[in-house]
Image (cartoon, rainbow over all chains, first blue to last red; front, side):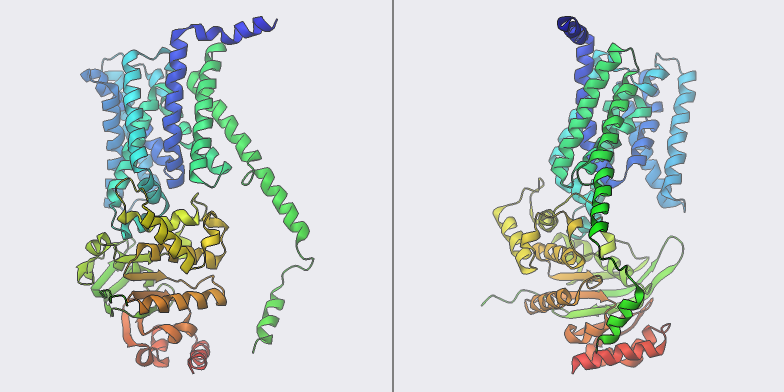
Length: 307
Length: 261
């Protein structure tokens, strides 16, 4: 009986394509989780969403020109952020409006191109990812984009964190904040390119926001936040890919459902910032509070007593 | 006997700033912060104090005019680590996962190599700065877990660790208890004695004449500047705070005279 269950559990691992898919998605989970900490702290979730949608025309163009999809995707993703920055500085529009206009414009252009330009781009795979059927060249591109991201973050992690925390101080000590801005945008675009095959453009934003948010709820030290983020993300990618094969589910969808489940757990049970812990603290402190509520009269009395 | 370090002035020359919504925040502002002084920047809310600070620090580009620090353009002065800035409390994300020690260490980044790996000297200066503001025992706290006064002291320690010769403090005494305010003023007086140039913006009119050498009065433009005794007068304050009921100003001003005597 036990051995039958065991066989059932390990059966998927006989397939090289599945093992490969699990490795690739774990790697993507790692890259997304690391960047996720910076993106959530900087408040750039919407920017991530914008870039992920804006890469679509790049993928189509890349296939049409027969160049690696990662290059086309990166050029268009990064181009969208430049366009956003330019329009924002030249018009009186607010940033969220500009982001909305630019990313839907790019995305729509991509849709139109897919239907007109002959290529074997499968819209469904772009939208929702296809890690179980990932090709060798796609894996190589994912690895290159992901490794580039990790290297850049590893080398510039302190400056990027300072830039997220206090860009004014970065400027005051003579650092070039413009360079940091574009560095963070570039690695964001690179990460999205890396995650394209795993999560697809619709769900990649989840992998860029949720792990960092889990870490942020669980700790107020950055290195711990990073660990929680990477842990939850890699676990979700591995477990989600495995489940999706076993039960014949959408891979990107399963990964994000698992990840969101972890987020809900963290949100409720986080030791300090969880809903339960906060409710408990509130109850404790209201129990200890002095029975007389604050009244403005008391304060004026104190003032009157003062010479 | 330490050799006297060079002193640096701030020269603001005809600076005007208009924000995106076409509101003129500052016009034709010209003033000088004399080297080695503590200078107070005084004006009502919305008078452009923060705008002038941001122009001096290069956080925003004035539409017109220029700022020099020690004769250098602001960017050059910043590259030489001449300028430190202590932000207002509401400009900081207090939920950010950094400790007091991390924040003070950020004052040293400009001296480090590209990887920002702290040297023993960086660590020593961070600890010394924490000690000067009395924050050593709070160094591992996340910054949101500090009281109002401790928060200010943490960022003051960052400015000390940076060893900037010109220090700008934006509303350093808001949300700070009297005891901490007094300690901070003592520290500012020490820094002045070491040759630092200090510019503070403040609402707290009562304490100005106790420690500020010079005063700059601001309401959209520079209304007056000079020695505290000559400039910080009832007439000038009434002109600057024109909107305030005069009786309230008299109280403030009487308070000043009592403290000064």
